[in-house]
Image (cartoon, rainbow, N blue to C red; front, side, top):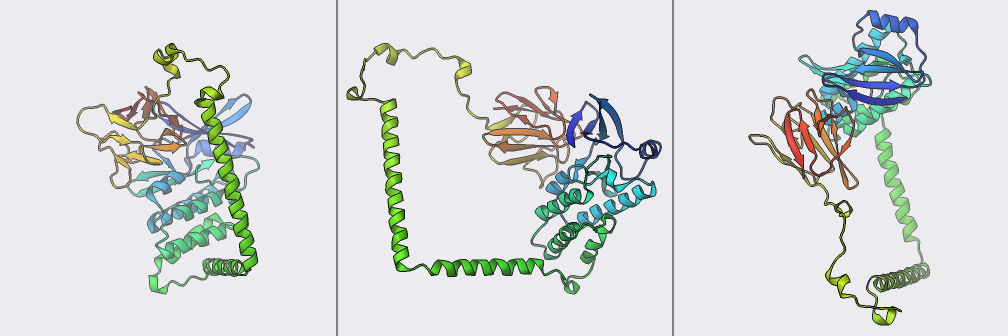
Length: 377
């Protein structure tokens, strides 16, 4: 399965291509009925291969949603309730659950007045495993859960362990969060996995310590001798390497066979093309509009940009900017900008970015978050 994202001035799409097994009945049913909880889609053929185009305008992937909103009692209940309802509705229309994508990247969330609503993708892929896909969701729950909330953490771990079983039912997943509705003092965990894990860690550390303390004095002396020998070898190698490098860069007259001093080489540096001069790395984005807006300093590994205060690294209080608009990631020595499926789009040098399409920032790039203009310096 190959997933890409496309965007024009008004709509945003996720495009899935791969080895499909189309069902005339199912696709006919979905075209003639607006099934609750499923994204609308259309299909095209490219080079003899079917592509499914899903309209994801104004929505975020479940992975992004959980990373931004974090796992709370409320949104965990909503997520599993929505999955439960969508699975039941799909079954009512005689759509096979094996033809629904259940990964954290292919489930989308839209904020409505009633709260977050989940949307699934109908995609009749061959050779897919619905249980392995749902593992990507439970693994992400464990990553993003607040580990200070013991009850919520335990529910996420229990849900993960249950999803490892081949007879796990998505329609019953909501049963695992009912424990959160009971008072704290009545909650008793029946899963000793976490406690066994802690006990095992303590046992391993104890055995490792006892093994270390069994070393005799003679063995200890032998270890010290080996360490000393290795340090001397390392010192000699480093010294010779530094000496060789010095001779290569700054040879003395006695070390050079044909040492000739040329004043022109010293006083008149050679002409160098500007393209050959290494440019300093980008360091910030400077606001170019009217009024006030914060500079975006490029110093963190992940910088989130949006209009919602308290949950973004940089808050842009403008009406056209989405709550979670864009993100800048540091990859090696580069900074890469990506749009988070914002309503009004993210532009770089006049080109609109598709959802999760990274653009490496260069000096003097013009970046626009909706109509809020910045310059990379």
